[in-house]
Image (cartoon, rainbow, N blue to C red; front, top):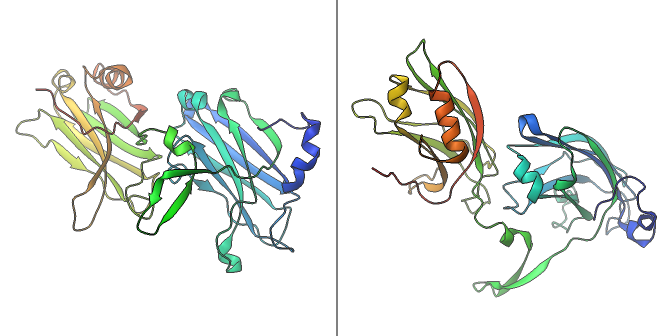
Amino acid sequence: GGVEVGADPACYLPLAALGTLEFTLLFDADNSALHCTAHRAKGLKPPASGSVDTYVKANLLPGTSKASQLRTRTVRGTRGPVWEETLTYHGFTCQDAGRKTLRLCVCEDPRLRRRRRAPPLGELRVPLRKLVPNRARSFDVCLEKRKLTKRPKSLDTARGMSLYEEDEVEAAGEERGRILLSLCYSSQQGGLLVGVLRCAHLAPMDANGYSDPFVRLFLHPNVGKRSKYKTSVRKKTLNPEFNEEFFYAGPREELAQKTLLVSVWDYDLGTADDFIGGVQLSSQAGGERQQHWCECLGRSDCRLELWHPLDGAPLQLSD
């Protein structure tokens, strides 16, 4: 487990054999963001003698590892690399802080040495419930060996291999990701402006572990007017930024009775697009989805942004 600076003298015994990592975490609750600043590592022990080219890789657990993977740049030729680089998770909420763990790995960059990809030089985990919102906390922690579990049920029969996988992915359930939407009823334009701002930690749909996401909007019922829109496609990313805005004309009271279906898709050339997840906003939706809809259509010219978790079940319309 992670300890704060100097909290545990045992840290300086054999455990420290893999080296230490200094980093700072800040949960910015007002902007739903988690900032992780990787400062430096000391005393790294690469498998081969000599210097080493390293970067820090971050993941949020439980969750699909590719979806929440962020990394620093590579620092070359040293066992005491200094990164001073901040990695940011957008759409990180108090609920996430209560149940997620941040894993940081110090990895060797295989591209620079023409070596095969090696296991990380060391990793550590921080349960994020320990963070006080809006207060930075600094750590100087010993790196540990990577924990892998062998799961016989993931036998790759085609190649007769049993795969080593990380135990956390299973615990994640079906986490599809989340979307940041803005809503505003414009009295000047006489209609609803829907902003599709960004998505975070989308479930990967393609063999390369990524997706090519885009977002579809459908306002129902909207007879005789344009009801459907879609954003452009963002290539090979699980954290796309869209910043696109769409307009539905009509009186506020009328729009408030309708349902907005927002769905995120993985674009596939020549085959059907894969559904990643969706969210339904209406006056009957319940929870924050209902609150967001009703607050923005309950008054004019009030722009509200809110992160919504995506539901993996295809969206149903109740007539």
